[in-house]
Amino acid sequence: MKNKVDFKIASFNISGGFYIGNEDNEYLDREAVDSVDNKLLQQIINIINSEQLDVICFQEIITTERIKYIQTIVKKTQLKFYDFFELSECNIVKNTDCGLAILSKYPMKSIIKEIFPNPRLSKTTNSGNTYYTYNKGYMMDEIEIYDKKLKVLTHHGFPYRRFNSTPEKNKEVFKFFDNVVEKYNPNIITGDFNAENFMVLMNKTSNKYKRTINSITTVDGKMFDDILLPKEIESKSKIVKLLSDHYIIINEINY
Image 1 (cartoon, rainbow, N blue to C red):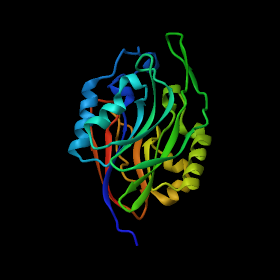
Image 2: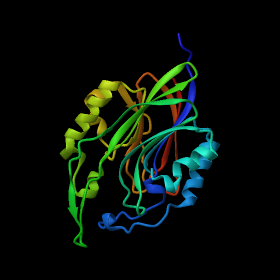
Image 3: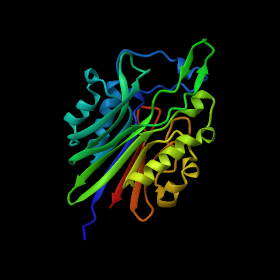
Image 4: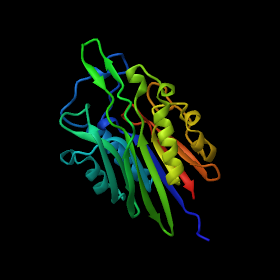
């Protein structure tokens, strides 16, 4: 029988690398900047090192190589293994793309990367500009921690509220994700669900997994980010506020 291992995993919607802080009706009209905020980058590096994280999952992280966001974290922490999934252009920082990433202290291999069915929600703002939902998706890697191989899945859901919609009006996306979870049976699920009641919309997942955060994780009081574990797995959670519109969520897991 394999021995249990204690390790720390975190999940963080990095919002392109800096704090936006604009929650008004013209959120989609915000002007893109030329570069990321290195203050947030240093905060992330500090928290990885001080918390001695074994794995961290990112959403909305810039994947464009010239920005070197992922590479800098790898260089300045013990998380030397990484994988990423580029999803769409980043409308926060000019001429960049962003997506998902998993960084690990332990060897890892990619299992699957897939885009969610895009509901193609649209919104025309007061400026006269019309915006559509960018691609979102999920990725899963197998991480080898001592004698265990754990499947870690991270994802980013669609920002329904930004487009005057709701998760309930887009049940097909959650049904798709629910089937993904059933098919691949990940050991850990992390991410920004962009919905507070996602477990109600994912029956198969809610039967097997539990929310371990289930607390406010954004500056405007939303419970969007979480780490899901099988119901029998023990963990201790922690939330840290950084210079971003999401908080970093951390779990110490005995698996």
